[in-house]
Length: 372
Length: 68
Image 1 (tube, one colour):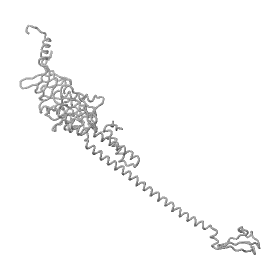
Image 2 (image 1 turned 30 degrees about the vertical axis):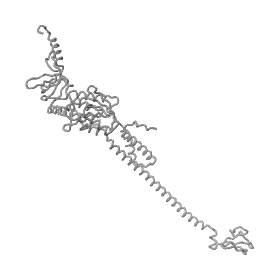
Image 3 (image 1 turned 135 degrees about the vertical axis):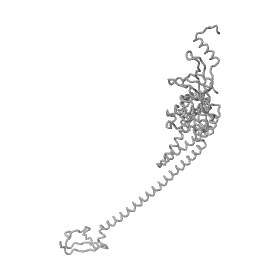
Image 4 (image 1 turned 180 degrees about the horizontal axis):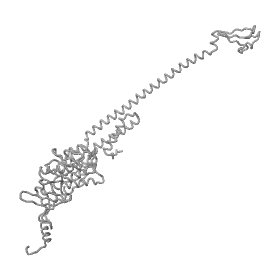
């Protein structure tokens, strides 16, 4: 090798080829130092232990969220020799490790996203009642998935579950979960809700749910989200960003769909209430009808009574005008040849007259006519 | 003739039923209308019960063939 003379560029190319062959990617765990972000895009930091320090270079898109010096992280990168800046590792992914670092990183991210309003209660949407299409993001071989489906089958039916099978832990998990959320949001026939779930685990296992990319994707989902991570102590940031959170996969199902048995019982009681309602209406209609009949007959009786009184009154009035009544009181009707005599000028001395009294008629002759 | 399964979702059926129940609670007495609404509600309840007793969940994989 000594005999071959290389240019600096040739040497850099040769060394990089060798490095790429020998170490396509390495994982290094160490303490973060000299962490800085340039132009909101480029990331520079060192990972160190007591003796050594290694430089990394990458972009912010590979970070799980805001970081600070002193955190213990695991970085995956490809070693390479930069033509001008020397040796470093090209960052592929990075995750805080250990409870302390994970919690610290989560706190930093929470403060940042809180300030942006990502967790604000007014952002929360209601989940639809008994959705018929549900997006499910989880690991298909996990207990969480089996619990979810088992409880779903027990509780409800008719749901089309659109399963996006992803890793839910490890360094590939965040990107896969983000991709799945985006995929479900792009379907022409959108699901009505997206459930993201996994069972419990250590703080390390749950790191993907405190990853900035995942938290942002949950918050940005057009479809309402339900995030259920099976742990009770700390709530993950993805849960804070979700519209609704559940404590476990089975709890997620309980929130998502009603219970078949309870629903059937509720329907039976609705049916009872309807029957009672209808009977009430029927009863009321009958009562109304009876009342109407009573009112009508009262009205008719009153009309009849009134009419009777009026008739009696008329009859009495009429009696006053009856000439026979006058005869009874002592008056007489005088006639000559069938013609009533109303004036003294109608008769002469010697005329035969009929004098009608109430109980008979007297024949009489005119003996004298005097006027006045 | 075989009964056709309802094409409406459970949520839609449930919303229709709630509307009828509300009408009944509003208290306008019209027996003809009440009878018609009652028949309608009973039909909805039957459809909902059929749904609850027969509907099965379906699972469709939309991604992730790489890690199964």
